[in-house]
Every structure is written in structure tokens, then in C-alpha cells.
Image 1 (spheres, one colour):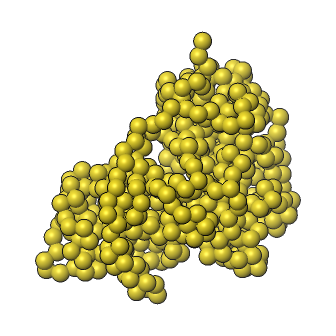
Image 2: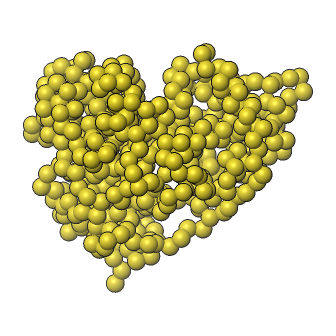
Image 3: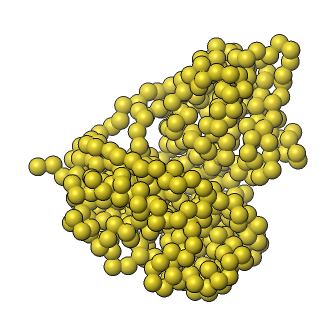
Length: 460
């Protein structure tokens, strides 16, 4: 009789649940439920969505794990009740507090050295300081702070204490990535008083048992789960093209980048997952399609019909500011337009611009880790476009592998659940996903034009 595990992906937009065969990794059944919109959300709504999506499947599972959106601040009082709505990773209210805390910790280099990251508004610790500064009564009531996946793991039941994992904890700003431990004194400094932090469970640890008898694994952050679901190996760089763009890699040692381009997280296996994030991904293609009056499939076809380099048209795709590099007030810039510029050139420039921006992220990773990029694994909704897949190897200059579309975050959570269930030394080795490999001659001229425009607009 087969054993099944349940992987849950509690993302910003929705909760997805996959029931997976332990031996083969085959997805048996899946379900999902929507989350409320907004950058501040009552975390109890996530519990309701998890019950809706995972409830029908949980009774059939022998183990379960939750992968959640990183960084979100879930403040609880002494009775475990929610103090206020959770502030999510994409809530920028604490931008000023992020700058203040970086300086309090001794500047960017000292901040990265202590925590693995140079703080931006997404980091959990900056939200604690915002709470102290703006809602002192709520700050005073806060007795414990959890991350979204911690809160959901607790609500699965059977857990004697609040728990988290090294991967998600490493994005809080009060975790020491070099020594792999929380620094409670930092959390106390940010909020103004001491708080309870969850116990950090090890990657394959069992932290509880549900009412139906399923083993509860530690869970992790969404980026860590995606790496686990893909089976990311050293030398691989995962480039995810979604609403934002994320480039991540697995390495053996902690990363401390004083430029702030790369955040030095832990992964879900005992290694590290440095990543670089851009703010402008699929929405750039939305803009291009809307401006040209076409659908996304036609936009891709138009881009592939144009000459490489878009006849000199270059797009700097910083439409909503940018994080890599750090230009929060930047806007998008087209350069090289002439009366001869065609619609196809505009379409291709959109793809080349986004991919060049991701190359910046990939190169920042290589510089911070000292690990050359062997190949790119291209995932995410926007990566399904033929133009993205075919143009990418020319921009990146290495082979690009496009795995078949799948819910890799939920699969990573399921793989962690199977690891906890079996007690093996390593996560299970499941089937290899079908993938397409794309190669092309490197197009350094296009990237050079993009880099010149990036530098020319640095003071804008």
C-alpha cells in the first residue's frame, strides 16, 4: 500500500496543496484556495484557506509540511492570539526603519556580516521596529513573533511549541547565518522588549502529529521549498520569472554581501540559498502586451520575429523601482527608438530587458558566492513564453533548462514531509521532471547596450 505526503504552498495569492506518492514523487491530487489581497492580512484567513485546500487531502497523508511566503510578521500575544494583521514581505511601510536599523547595526557591511542581509523593507525585523514606532500598544501586547509558515505549522496541530526552520528564520534579520542561530537580543532591540521566538527545527525533524495521525515536518520558506522541489545543485542557478524575478543558488557556506544585492539565506537541507531579487518580472510583459494591443502569446511571437538586439532598442525595465540594483524610485526607460523602430523591436526589447535585468542578479550571485554559473533553470509563469526560453541562453551565455511547469514550492514541501516521515539521511530522490534545454550563441552586444543604459541612468 502506498504512502502519501502532503505539500502545502501558502503563497501571497493562494494556498496550494499537493498529495504526493512517497516512493515516486507522483502527484496524486491537488487543490487550492484563494488568499485575501493586500500587503497586510489577517493570518487566520491563511488557516481558513489551508483548511479548504488541504483539509480534504490531509486525512490521506502520512506526513505534511508547509512552505510559506517569507518574511511576513505574525505578532501573537501571551495567549497565542493574533495582535494585528500580519505585515507581508511586500509591505514597504518599514522602508525608513530598514535604513535606520542598517545604520544601528554599523552600516551595510556590518549588517550583512551579522545577519546575512543588508536590510530592506521586506525583512521581518524592520516590521518589528515599525510596530514599535507606529503602534506602541500593539508592540507592548506582542509576546511572540512567527513567520507565516510557522503559524500554519502550529495550526496543523500536535506541536508542543512554536517552531520554524533555518531557511525561513534566516530572512528575519534577527538570525545569525554564520552560526545558524537566532539572536534574540536583536529582536528585542527592534521591538523594544524581549519576545518568544520559535524553536528552530532541523531539516528532517518531526515537530508534531496532526489529529489524523500525520507527521508534521518543520516546513520552510517558499524559495527554499522551490529549490528543494527542483533538486537544485551547486552550479545551478534557478531564475524564477513571476511578478518579480528571483535568482537563487545552493552553496555550502554562508554568504555575506555588503552591497545588499544578494541576501544570504539558509536553504532547507542544511546548506545555504543566497538569492537576488528584482521587482520587475511578468508585469513588464503585461505592459508590453497592453501597449502593443496583443495577447501574451502574440507578444512572444512578435519578439521572436525581431532581430536579436531589437535594432538597437533597449528597455531598462525598472517600472516600479528596483531592488537589484537598489533604485526604489526608478522608472522604466526605453532607449534607441527611431522612426524605423517596429512593433516587433518593442516586443523583443521587453524580453531582452527583463532577461538582462535577471543577468544582473545572476552575476551578483556569482560574485558573492565565487561559484561560476553552469546552467540556468528557468521557471515561473512568465518563463512559459517561447520568447523567454529562446532569448534567455543568448543573454545569460549558458545553457537554459526549462523544467516542465509544476508547483515546485508545494513539491518541495512534500519532499521535506517525506524526508521527515522516512527518517532518511537525505531527502528522497524522486523522478526527474521532463525538461527542455535551450542553447544559443551569447549575445554580449545586447547586454552591453543594456549595461550602458543602466549606468547612464544611475542618478535619475
